[in-house]
Each structure stands twice: as structure tokens, then as C-alpha cells.
Image: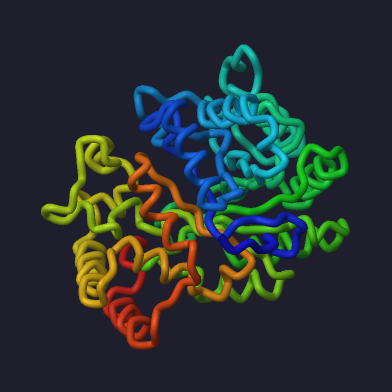
Length: 372
């Protein structure tokens, strides 16, 4: 598998990154162990998690930090693997009275405090992640979403009358610098950020002399959500070459085609088991435009002799802004993971005719999964 530096950092990562957000809800320890082993066999050295995982958080099985504990158990039993792997996790952004913040202490803090990105909270979150991961360092610590108000998870319109309290970016940046200096993290990244946020973060890091520490941004990117193509692509390129870690490249599984008639979705598939989760991509709740675009992409894949999932992943891999990033690939079973990782053994190739057909669908249904 092709390796590359993540952004301008010294982190050397594989082109594919193993996602973990189902571990602890849809997958148990045995499943996770098998997924890690399979990913490593394919040359994957990069694993992404978060302090709030697993998701969905409304699942009966949910417990904050459970995914980190599962990964930490694997690392504890495979100590030689730790230096081979690049481990990324995320600090939760603004979330009032959060069980995630409460779980940073043992026993959990009561009443539950807010998740914020002030210095004390960021450092407490990092220490809790280190404890659960059973390691002395996190290679990449990301901010799951900003402390300030921004439209999130499919919302697109900025509501200027929303809350205006926020922790200054400079305070959070100083806390991350302190964690780098302490050897607790090697680099840091953003997630679910905006062009404004990227520019402000670059400015703050330059003032602190830590620009090379800002390695990545983890935002949604797929055939049905190409917003990154515009302003964010420019912002990340001009602000030091920040690498993209695209999440939900299969639109929560919708772009795999498995939710079509006869597509193979089972009772354990995400949108069957959790029909209210990621409603913008769920077949029962997604917009007609989203479903039509997904069907068009599935038909295009059939026309060119590939699978819908391979087409969706190959498209993301061809984007120039992925040259310094990594594609997050997750799965709930090994067959699915094998199918999604296998193409990474060769360079992504989509000819001009296929790319033009993709763009034609995009122009008919531009970012249909995004909402006002």
C-alpha cells in the first residue's frame, strides 16, 4: 500500500486508514481484533478513533470511550505493533452536559460537565484517551468539531444568531502545543471545520511556531458531498498543505449499493439496525435527490464494470488533495473490509470518460445529502 506524509507532519501513514466507530456497538473485541489484523495484512498502519466512539450514541450498548478501550486492549496484547501503527483519536467539541466529558474521570464526573475545547478540557481528554488506549502517546489528536458554533453533519447554512460563546482558538492551540512538548501527542488535526476555521487555526499556529504540527482535517467527502472541492481545498492547500482524512466516503453505506433492492443489506446493516442514524443517507429518510444520485452512481459503476463501492472509493482516491491525506475505511464485517481495502493495492484509475460521467451526475444533483 502506498505511504505518504500526513500533511506537512512527520507522520508516515498508509493511503487507507482503518475507521473504528462501530466498535463497541455493532462490533465487539473479537471483531475489532480481526479487522486490525486484516488491515495490517493489507499494509494499513493508520487507525482512527475518538473519545466519544462508538456511535450512534443513542444505542443501548453505547458507552463513551468504549472504542478506545477496545483498541487499547489490542495494543496491550500486541505491544510490538504499537511502534508500527499511527494512532489517531479525537477530542469532542462543544457538547453541553456530556457523558463524554464525564467519562474522562474514574468514576465518571457527576453531574456531567460540558465538552469544551479550553486548555484544561483538551488536556484532560488527552490523558483519558491515553489511559484507555494503554499507550504513552497519541500520534494524531484531532478536534472532533469546533468549540464555536458551525453548521455540522449535513447542515450548510450558517445561522448568525446561534450562540456566540466560544473558547478562543489560540487557547486550544496552546494546549495542543503543550501536549506536543510533553510528548503526549506527535501532531494535531481539525475535524468538521470550515475555511474560516482553517485560516484562523493556521494563523494561531504560525504565531505559536507550531504550523508543522497542524497535520490534517477530517471532513465529510464523497460522491454525494463534494463541498470540500471548493473553499476548503484552497484553504488547506494555502495554509501549509493540510491533509484530508475524508469520512463516510460511502455515504454511510448508501453508495455501496447494498440498500438497493437485492443489494444484500442485512438486519445488522447500519440503516436497518439504526434507521434514525445519519438520516441524510438512510434510505428511509434521505432526500429523493440523494437516493436518485446514489442510484445514478450505482448504475454508472455497473456500466463501467466495477462495484458501486469501488467507484465511490476510487473517485475519492483520485482527488489531488488526498496526496497528503488518507481515506478512512470502516466496516462491520471482514468481507466488507476486504472488499474496500483490496483496491488500495494498486493506484486508483478512473479514465476521463468515467470522471466526466461522475461530474455530470454531480451537476444534476450537487451535494444532495446536504441540507439547509
